[in-house]
Image (tube, rainbow, N blue to C red; front, side, top):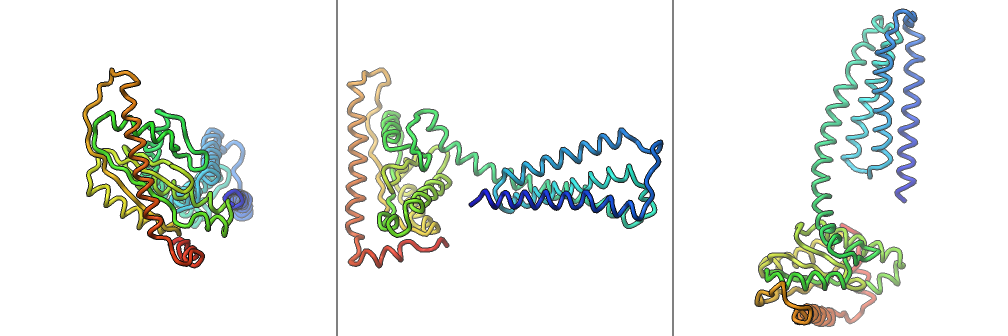
Length: 320
């Protein structure tokens, strides 16, 4: 769906550029005399022509690579205006435009206006990239430690999460666990189809990643179930985060059941101990996960409606 839109947008930029490239010289040719060859400064033509070609290349890269949105629009408009300014300067080296006062005034406007708009777009791009980088750091720091990832959501999977949970227990640092399960996801898959179900899981994974701090970890635990490890968390933070996630995720058009736990601190573990001595940490991690799964199963059972089909329709609404 995104590729036709990008292709159409790219074709539109190409078409408008070609129109300007051919129409403006034609108008100048009809209304102003051309410079004699001895009067032409070929060095200026080469430098201004190079600026025009390079700025057009930048414009095509932005149009083809960036997603739609306000930042992209500002970058495209700013670069397009700068390209126009470069092109008008290039034509000024070929035609005698002093006889056209309006053109002289118009020639000076696109470049400063384009650079101003481009600066605004770059500033907003910086803010956007800060959020993206924070999200990538949340994921990448765990990718480098362990390569077990879920192919659909690109999150760590259950085995990877257990690995990080054991390490967290060994560090003797406070942390919290939050488990989320999408309500009536099986019925949603049946009604909307597997492709829409996969898209919903990817959207939920993406949204959860943006809500966490860089030191936290979110994983796809199983099917439509996700689990979050909050580093350095206390009970009020974990409970508040669980409530905010449960409420905020409704913007994606679905509802989730949420449970959380705050493991009690244990004795510090010596890093030099043998693998057999570390076994209790793995058992404790499995016990915590089992506890969360039992709490989730009980909550899902308590929320089971009398008429599941009717509730399924209302649970999966249009995103707000």
